[in-house]
Length: 266
Image (tube, rainbow, N blue to C red; front, top):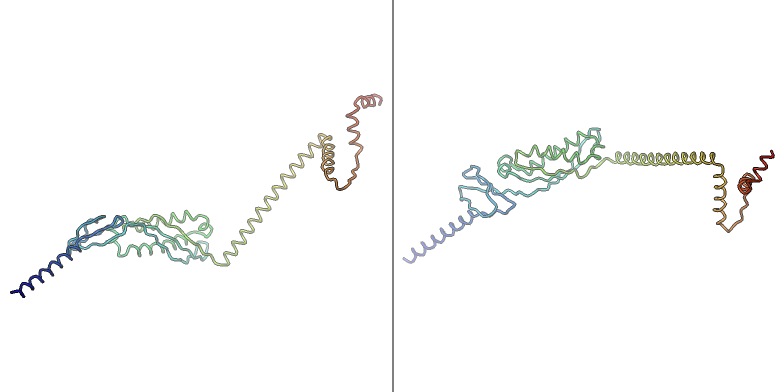
């Protein structure tokens, strides 16, 4: 009798343990950044979460889907641009799941599928532009990539938020050619600036010559200013010839009466 009782107790304990395991497996806890996609006997149900809920064992199955933004590096792609330059380019992709049911049921592996779409789109878009446009209008290329990839992943419940071209690797000969072009452009700007300076200086000199021609006394004042500047240097003796016209100008200014009388006598 005691043996039968022990056997029954053991069976009850095993059943209780199994029931406890089934109960624990039915309890699901989903964090805020995840959703649980539920299949009941193979039929898709509404996603559940966040928080705690129950899944009927055997009859229901849950697939977790992360709703956070996923950062993905697009591998280096070798592309021929529109002007027949072979380059290597890579990018970074930011996307997230906005419809967990579609992400599970409409594509087998949404992360891998998004990666493949990003690679093919990167090669296609870069191949349709010239190298100068790719280097100078990076923002425009990024927006075009984001728009095309997002349109293709939208049926899967995937939202592509940002696509950025990271690096553009040029051939060595192209790098040297661009360096020579940049150097030539800098020399061109330097010559233009120098020519513009010469033009402005010549205009200033021409204006000064017109002023001196209209007022001869300005030349004498400039002569005296030059003497004043040289006189500041006391380490040498400098002899300047004094033009008679200069003296005559000052004498005429000092003796206007004699000058007028002389002119009257003449």
